[in-house]
Length: 274
Ligand SMILES: Nc1ncnc2c1ncn2[C@@H]1O[C@H](COP(=O)(O)OP(=O)(O)OP(=O)(O)O)[C@@H](O)[C@H]1O
Ligand SMILES: [Mg+2]
Image (tube, rainbow, N blue to C red; front, side):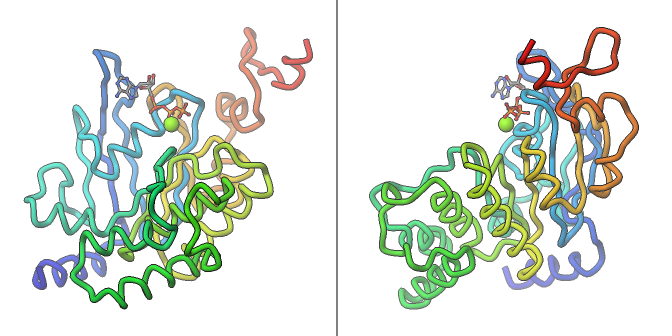
């Protein structure tokens, strides 16, 4: 494992791209959901995946983080093909990957501290005191140290999300994948979760990949954005470039419009009032 770690550190130095998708295509029941996606996630950035409901955001996230092999194309992590990596390397890559998925439930019978300690207990042989200290440190990083001894049922929605984030970073991953981190939260609580994501990125250098259809949240946190439409990359680039993209389909999406029959777009709020 030591030589493997050195190998991975060398790779980290030699490339800025942490994860790459190459001609990635994923189908369900004969229907192509993702159709030839090419993208690269750079080390140290907040990369946001956006697009209308059902466009394949969660599917792409699962492809990228190693949970779902694509039907065609490849995913590489620091130059290693994720889905053909030998078991030891795959294990190492997985330990360097944090997941905070929608509905990624905390275990209800364990305290918040024990939930965060769980990945450390399962994947390390650290002494008990170090495990608990590390778990407390992670809770502190998300502003939840005061809730360490509470059960998940006593937490608010925003606190649960932050506890799940603390668990996702328990093993000091290089990269964390989030699926709709602010779903179901009021705007102020959603902003708190955004702040945690940005803090972990800016202060601790963790690469963040965030799926969201919450536009204010995307704008607040993103360094770069990919927008998926009809299973393809409709735009990919720095946040402001994507935000001001001239493609009418992008304008419709970003300005929260529904496409009108003449293609000019119709404001959603006006549409609902009619
Ligand atoms: N395991 C699966 N089996 C069959 N179809 C699936 C599966 N997972 C996703 N799909 C289909 O693939 C399409 C994309 O789903 P996905 O969950 O990736 O969309 P999404 O962009 O994340 O949507 P949302 O914004 O609503 O979360 C949907 O039509 C969905 O029904
Ligand atoms: Mg989804």
